[in-house]
Amino acid sequence: MLVFFDFLCYSIDQVYRNFRKGSDGSPDFSAGIVVSALQTFNIMTVVMALSMIVHEQYLSKPFALAVFGVLIIINYIRYIQIEKFSIDSIKKKWDMKSIDYQKDSKFFQGLYVILSVVFVFALAIYLGQNKP
Image (tube, rainbow, N blue to C red; front, side, top):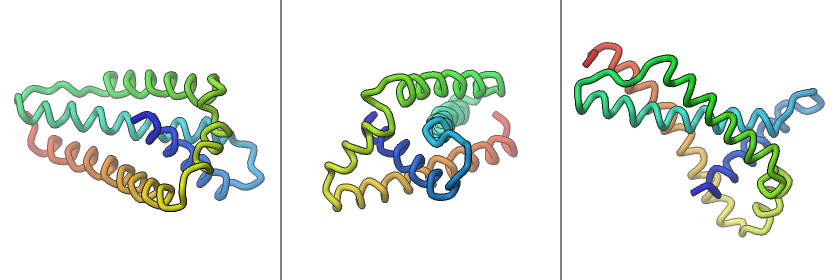
């Protein structure tokens, strides 16, 4: 499962590098932030779905920010501090994969990003209109 997030982080890093050529930003860190945001969206989606099922409010801004902060720290350590999971190491693993694997992986990465964003906002809008 973490391999998926490793390759997602690498793909986001590559997109960032292509769009921000010559900038002083840190694509590795920025990719880690985006992955953390998507993971936070997934956790928030589960919490909101649970809120719908049990008719209790579990999600709050401090909770969401705390989850996001923890995931930023975890992903920072993983992708910046640990050489084994650095973007350069992930690139080497990515390059060893077949073209078909890379195409399938990029498809599922795109699907994951779209569904993560759609579900979190759809549930937030729904719950905002129909408070449990």
